[in-house]
Length: 456
Image 1 (tube, rainbow, N blue to C red):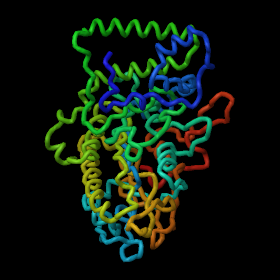
Image 2: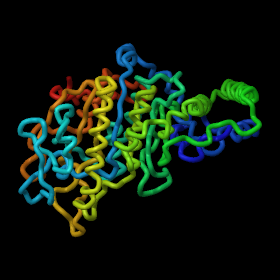
Image 3: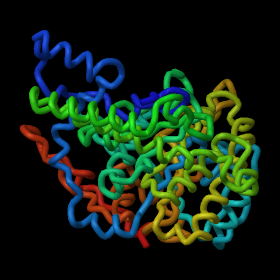
Image 4: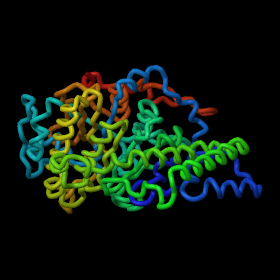
């Protein structure tokens, strides 16, 4: 079978990197030969914690949410935008920039003048102005705000998309249940989205299919001269040998290895969904021309056609340590346009009530400018927005003080945020993960209550 990881579909991202080895190493020649045949290269990463998979079957409380086909789109503003130039401006204060504010459709609520389209639909959104978290560096902030908890070695908590794929997804569907749309190659140290061990203890099949800057998956056709029958025969032989190896060596790694092959077969069938040229020109024009907008359009298309969770990352353009105002003058209007059209399109298609849309980064920006006229990292007080499934419309929750230095009303940390997200999607935020010989983990620790004022 032709390898689909070339171009922009990155199979090593599909396979979770290991935190534990499921089997003890064996030095026999037979074992070494099998490892070469089945675990060489990046697929060796499949030796993750798949052995715990059976502990996490979808419980009854998730059945109704799955039947309704609840979905989630996360617009991840990598690098972290400034709350002052978006959702929580401070006009006339020292922390304010050169931009004014604009009246929204909610009486008395104003946001940055750079967001006129969002101002017109704020009655469909919920804005949280009182996020307060602890991580002040990108990698830690990304982990915290995509998993809901800091790492707790030796286990890594699954990323939000993996949890939703496992709880709400249809794994027998050829359409990937968790898709990450990222314009930058994963190897780009400064621009690509970073998150190690995506699925954590859930196993490789709940990791993402990661697609890069091109708006389609290439190289998914069979090689010239290989018929469908020959391809099926080869797959049958591979499957037989894999099962024999698994039975002979009690290797949990092979379960993840087979999951990757199944993912590839699904991608071969679902590849046309990733081709944006098949969508109407009018759609591409209103979301584009930038990659962020085009990937948001693709997210809408994938959710409409069977994906459960799609995360749209956009490199690190929001990391505005230099020339903050100029950076936001370029980026915020695109964000404004994309959020407006995404919400409008989901509503028009009757999908908004069952699709949760999240718009956020890993923290906020400082109320002051540095010597390079930029804003630095600031987790103390920042903003995000959400809309759709299970979320009350037209809510502005929490507040910061007059200069945006601290939360003055209704602080929200990552735990309360994730409790709210899971509740909105119909999942029990306190479901337990019982890992052998380790303390019980909860999806969200029980002292963190969902935010009732945000829930429909």
